Length: 556
Image 1 (cartoon, rainbow, N blue to C red):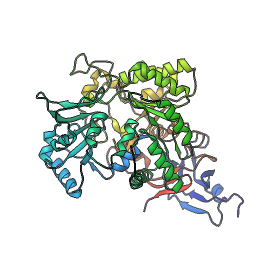
Image 2: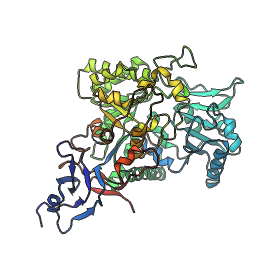
Image 3: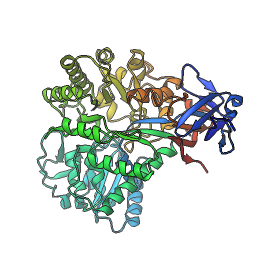
Image 4: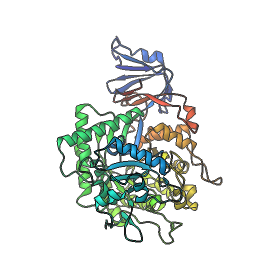
């Protein structure tokens, strides 16, 4: 028996190690939770002992585990039990899906669907409560847009929430009203959407992290309910080859649940959870984030970051632009966090050593975020902060070199591109403005400027599968013949989901490549990788996921 016998050996595989010093290999050995050797089959089988579990890779591709660099794990777990409208179009199909869903949950206080396109009832039709009433007038029904920034409620739900005559919710959120002063059913941004969720007397804690709020009181039964949702979400991630999650909503409650899961040994993935700074920055948000970072700092559950929002989305006119909206002269949107407050929060968070992540969709929002990061750098001095900008649907070309200069990371989602992943082109591309199309989701320009890019999906806002996201990135077509090609290569897409994901999370010394000494997180893929260049049915799938040296998913 060799003195350094492996616990697990994977052989007969094509190793795509993502390690530039040793890019390809045939086999790999694991001891405990670490990779101990990578090389030829002969070299690795020398590590076999009587208790070694030898896995036949059957010619598949073995890679580092995927980093999902932007998702919402608790809402994602909950969404697995809700109605997904992503593939539904037209009033007839909508009514069939909703009535079937309602029949399956006869006792639900509020029926909730998600994934609805803004063009669900036609390209030129703005959704109202009357569309929903036509399908389900007798029970409170609420559906969430594909971007999670807009919701629509039927009349029954609006009355239950006391919203028929509207409500003043302050800046950045709106109960949309018609000319007669009655709610249309459209609810923009979190404060308005939360009013509908409040109809439920239980099971609404998954959205608290979106606003940085904590539950008032939670019974043990409710904690177990939320742990079950987290478990389901993480198992779903493991099925897709994901081993590390960067959550993008956060509160202490979620970290407490995850820490309990780690103690029980039921975590399928590593996860980082930020403190979501409320828009008004009440209390001491940086102090709370620092305390969370101190209290949760294991190899599998950690904090270390804050999350903020600078704008919303184009489809409901809440994205912040540098130019007027084409259909609203004089209107460009407004920053959710005023620039002076944002610069102060960035400076404080940076001084505390926290990583900052900010949602920024429009080019105006991206510029405001860069300004805030530059202010923090000027106040505190340069450091390896890797502050992140989340989404970057659009960016002004002058701001790409500024990102490089301040060391910012671009966290982007190929499944958010209009025209991909089931999303329609309109109204997004028109509201973005034709002059901005060359810089929309332009991964190539950002990458070539030397800005690190990590990929993600924003699940449950978009489908979770990293391979589907890579397929969307590789098959994306420009919206006009005169536009530049924004695509990355297959190798660069894999980097965005592995080595660059690790870099964006300060994990490059322990994760992101199949290198001896690094933690044993990996995925075995079945299928021909070249098929990822083909638009249509995905021909590649994970068949084995290992996190921390433990098998977390194995295809039957």
